[in-house]
Structures are given as C-alpha cells and as structure tokens.
Length: 317
Image (cartoon, rainbow, N blue to C red; front, side):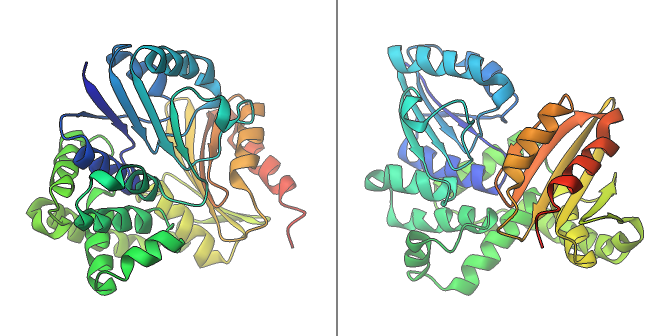
C-alpha cells in the first residue's frame, strides 16, 4: 500500500503538501490541478492511501472524480483537504473519505490542523507561509501561530517563496524540492535557486507594473488585458488596482481557448458563482474563490464573456 500526496502547485498547495509530507514522510508527491485530478488519480491504486491538498473539484469532471474517490476510500484511505467552494451538485457530507474543508481557511492551515498531533511545532511557519500566499493569514489560528514568531521574518520568507515559484508553472522538480525542504523545516531563504528566482521575478514584476497601464482596456466595471507578460493572477490584480475597477481580468490565448484569472476586492461580488455560470454557458469552465477565480472558454466567446460578466455586475454599486 503506497501513500500519495496530490497537491496544487501554488504557494498554498506547496505548503499544504509539505505539512502533509512531514506527517507522512513515506509519501510520494504528485502535482495536479482541478482539470487533471480525475486522470492523475489513476496513478494511485485502489488500496493506496491518498491525500489531496488544495485541489478544487471541477464540475465538468465531477463524475469521474467521485468514482475515483469512492474506489480509493472503499479499499484504501482517502483524505481530501481543500478550501474552494464545492460544486453545487454535491454536499460536503456526501464526499467519500475523510473531508477537511473550510472556505475561510487556507489549505495549509487545514493540513496543519488535520496533522497537528504528528508535527514538529516548527511546521507552524509553513502553515503561515501558505496562508499568506493565499490571502488567508487573518484567521484566528494563523494569527495565533504568528505570535510565536517575528512577523517581519515570516513575511520575508513567504515573499521569497511566493515570488520564487511565480511563473514556474511546470517546474515540478523545483517545487518538489521545495516541498521536501519545507517538510524538513528548512525556510525558503535556505534555497539559493529559489532566492535567485524570487529576485528575478521581483525585477520583472516592477518593470511590468510600469508598462501595464498601456495594455489595460476598461469596459464598464471590468479592466482587462490579453497576453500581458506577467502571471495572470498578478496582472488581474494590477489591472483592477491601477484603473480602480470593480473586477480585473487577465486573459491569455492558448490555441483555440482563452485562459483567465479574475480578481475583485468587493465582498458583494462572488466571482466563483459568476464564472461557474457564465463560463459554462459559453462552452467553458470556471470557478475558484469569491474574490479570486479563473476560467477557460473558447477563444471566439471572449467578448461575449466580458459582456456577460459586465451585465452581471450592474447590481454592484
């Protein structure tokens, strides 16, 4: 019986994976994403132990995912740790296996809580890094854990991790090495390659900030860019902030599709709900968090998408 950790490749997923690896040092680490989870779970045999960290359940692949969940939980062990909104078609109580789910916490915090009894207290730093990376560092537990440390150093270390992996989408060996280091209580600053990448990314980001105004288009309550040379998430943040728009949209052309990240700071806007509705209607998929979400649609429907999104934002003052 093998033990598998399936983790998302962003800061929160890496930190949740590291915490899980510290509790389950015999585990194999595998990176995946919502659209690939069902297929990637085939790597695990039904009798294995599987722990999934920070992977949203894709509605378009939900049937296959639930089939794999059921097979693994019936014959082996399944633990699902996540903080994304669940598909409307299923309740938390109906998911097979052990489910650790809370919309208000990062996956790193949830993993830390789930395995706390097996962890060195030093691993609380990793939970904090992941929470900062996912803008979930204001929860009662994370604030309590922060009190053990010098907050200034925590934010330096988390910044190195966040910036260092920015743009390293498929560099899985780099990310796997980071997980192993974090699980051994080695901070991000101990990894020379990661520090170098973080400094390079910060310089690139600053240069991009100076140029982004010339590439932003404003339509109604939306500010959007297409193929701007910065990560989609950061581009959406700066497009929104520099134009004082309600929603920032960063789009990227990929053959016949458009991939997007969207950001808002308004609590009255639920991007997860809007994208699940609009993207599906236009032949794509979407979802995430209320304030930070993503979508993929056919390229020819991008302008329709912007119009639909704007129409659904008219209720927000």
